Amino acid sequence: MDYYKDKTVLITGASSGIGENFAHTLNKMGAKLILTARSKDKLEKMVQSMNNAVSIPGDLSKKEFPEELYSKINDMKIKVDIVINNAGFGYSGKFLNNSMENYNEMINLNICSLTHLTHLFLKDMVENKSGGIINISSLASFQPIPYFSIYAATKAFVTSFTLSLYEEYREKNINILGVCPGYTKTNFNKRAQMDSVPVAGYLMSSQEVVDQSLRAYKKGKFIIINGKINRFAKFFTSLIPKKWSLKMASSIIKKGMSNKQW
Image: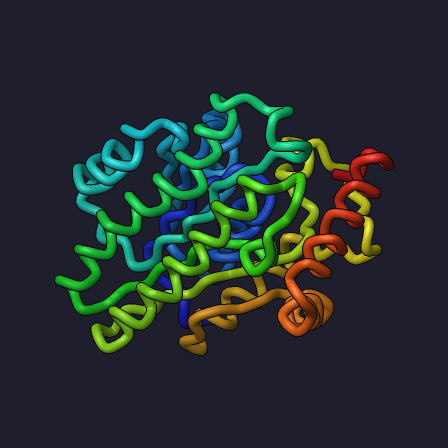
């Protein structure tokens, strides 16, 4: 896609999974990349293999890093055309089985840092009358998920926030897209104590998610639910009573946990 050629794209969580696939795909398309993640060594190796990329390692679960990242990019006198807020993680299990320290880290990364980076870079985009943001949310954002309660809640925020921003800034030549993958094979699975085989028998690759998302962004769409099965799941759960959808989600997650898949 020539559309992305020479565009400067900031990708968070760029060292693995969907973020890594965004980086490699956009590199092939001729984009200029700014990569950030906690894994300094992995980022440096990625940059060395790319045509035009820089890395700024750091931990976005720390409240001070979004401002630090923004300042470093400004110091390099780089104008960012697209921000891909991809970094995020979740934990599976009953709510009381994880510590508040873990939940605070998740909330800081999935919500606070995403919001902070969006606020910082969107301001510049409005001034420049161009640019865009891709926020990676989840199919879980449309349905409360027992045993993934905090993760699903954080992603509900991301989807709602993204749709609101789209409406606020769509007449300012700013393209804002929410991406909602279902079960995707990434390093997220390991951190959430999940296997690579989904209970429902359907597993998207990170590359599929990236390809669909970049096409959707180019077309100016404001939201994409990746995969026909996931779109059907969202439609189906919206039709049935909430009590039933909660029981269904609970049954699937509990089964997966017993099989060590979640």
